Length: 279
Image (tube, rainbow, N blue to C red; front, side, top):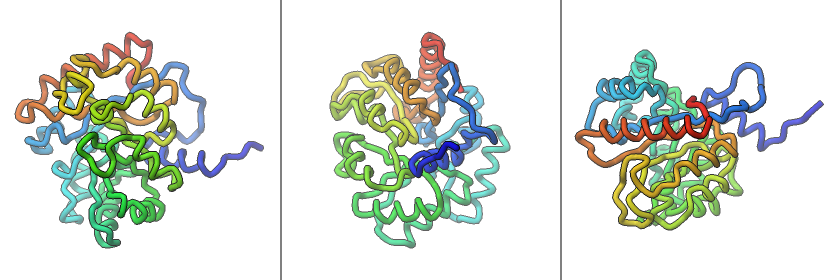
């Protein structure tokens, strides 16, 4: 009888938490799948009803929801607000980024109770180094996966995915990576190499394009800059990445849809050109 080791068991737990397992284990599909999603932070000037409308316009059901669109308090309202998205055909595939700056059980538990109330089993987190051990304890207790987000040149905690690697390697496998390819490229790190390094612990991917590979580069719609998106999609296929490629465009906050639609058109065209399918 074949055995499954602890590392594989934890990975399967995160897959199940993200709704990515069926009742029967099957082999990886022959055709690679790229699952597109959206970070709701790009719609931060708009309310939940408008966000739902944008998702319908994009024909994309997968939302990485920020707390401005699903408030953490009052906690009693969270299940009802989360249900409103699901009833409208929008899946809450992830939440965050959620920041952990206070090293106390009370503060950390409140955020995990929020995730539990929302029915979200995978989130993007940005704990400080000091709070990370406490977050690990709650990740284990609640059986929720966290992708630790790198924020580039001006982030004193986690500038690069390789800074994240140094901290999380010995930790529970439910703590992994949310690689932001824009921030990664801004700091002079190859996002393809970072994704390959993260491997099975990559729990979310935030994407945007950049005008140049430097820390002051302007963010652009996907396909308009220097981001090696084709190579990124290829490495995602190579590692059988099962989660989401979440567009996070922070520019044009008062009129985000033209650049968002342009980005989705580019990514969908690229998926087709590579012979992949959109999940």
